[in-house]
Image 1 (cartoon, helix red, strand yellow):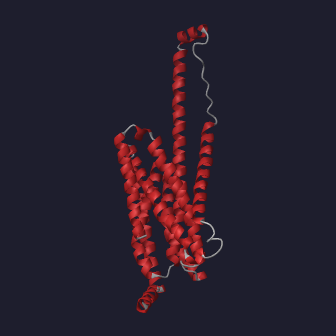
Image 2 (tube, one colour):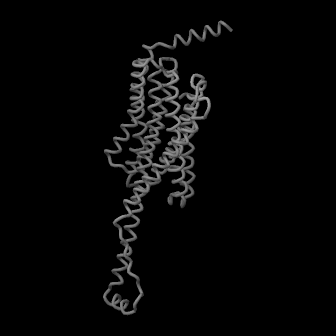
Image 3 (cartoon, one colour):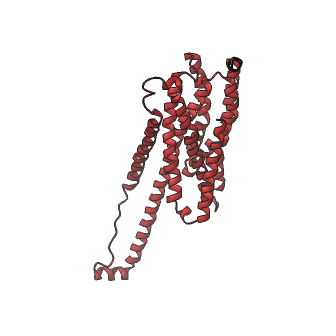
Length: 342
């Protein structure tokens, strides 16, 4: 028993090599940045390639369903369990008030309700903005016989029909614009939730001095960023942002985790805290719970529910609905498998 304990201590001391850990961190910054760029750019480039082609709408829908699976799995299999573990650590759970109340669940709830509040407020603002200035003036037909005779003789009835058709087209364009604005809002809120998660990952790795922990994380996080980037990129592709906004959102996702690693390295140098200190664990647990609540809400409400229950193209095509469900399963499965390593 004593030999086993001594062996564990020796392995732990051998793993805590600050110089080797720092070397691995710089390697991980480059690798994670490249894989993040690949992951988030792939669905955006595919959407632009299919744009204007008959399969464009279906391709974007399948990409978005895959993205929804990735986002949901990220929140439930990666972020939330890590947040619970951080706040359940004996260094935190033995203190007040952390041992008195399940703060992970509470902060997750706050995150979901915050996402709902942002969703309601922004959607109301968009609808109000597009609703004003569109006055609808319908002239009743058949009210007075004399007026009808004049309209029939002068061709005004035909003109009125054309005006009504134009009004219907304008109304449909207004609805489409509201939907597009909602999709953009979803993408932006999703990126906020993912950025929280990416910062936590980066800071945790940056503060760690355990090379045995960092080494397998580099490869695992590379795949993690590819799939998470594909999830966010699928939403960005459907939102139809301008090239500048798309490039900015892709860039922000790609640099967040590397910047988090650098920030973690700076925090360790300045404060001496590592990733297992009580303050670091509390911050990790609270931020992780909050971002998990955001991602759960966005994944279930704004991605899965909208596409599977309110998408005309899917409700009228059984084959597309089955394919979309398979894409959802593939996205959630791929991200769930990565939980074995990261």
